[in-house]
Length: 310
Image (tube, rainbow, N blue to C red):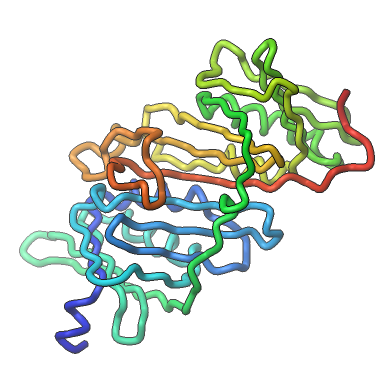
């Protein structure tokens, strides 16, 4: 590679591969669509769109959370098989804790992954490269965000449990309905299927930052999409902190679920151990970001001929 090319090469050093891997695994999917990586001075972003165009997943890791982050020049956008990157990071994370170095572009526009570990008198080097493809800057479904909005914050474990409990009744159903009521403040998830009906009320005492339109809301979604948005979080087993989730619904039923996973206990002495705040935004507002942000956007099902709830 020419010296000039090296001067413009993206170079990222991650001191805790397990934490980085855990964040990326939250949006792992069977989708055939390539994942779009966006690397700029603000940080590292991975965005994935479901084949149905009804589920959009993204991860944003601020530049400050890496041990070293260099992205000279313009923002880079590239397509990559996400599952291949996750498989490679799984291999790297099984090592002895060396730093992971990511470089782009390589000699053939590939993403280069390298880890050097001290092993006695010699160093052990693990190396891999991943082919990339040209990718346009992905469209943001939130460009169609339509106020007014309703929202609430809750420990993610309650959402995860509710969606898992709805698994049996959602089979063969017309979807899962998310309901919110302003008075009294409440959030419910329900499904009506051939296996039976089930309605689950989230504990009102656990709801924070609650705001709902006076007339209330109720929209229907595919169970598999809500399952991906609410239950796919993957954190290291030794991460003791809970998952805090903010759910926002616009006037047309578009759901935005933002998960904040405090992984400090799993990443002690790591650059990725910073506390997570809801002020973190994966956009131009990310100047003060001190944490990774995991976001899912779910599009509601088309209106049914008849409502599935009173």
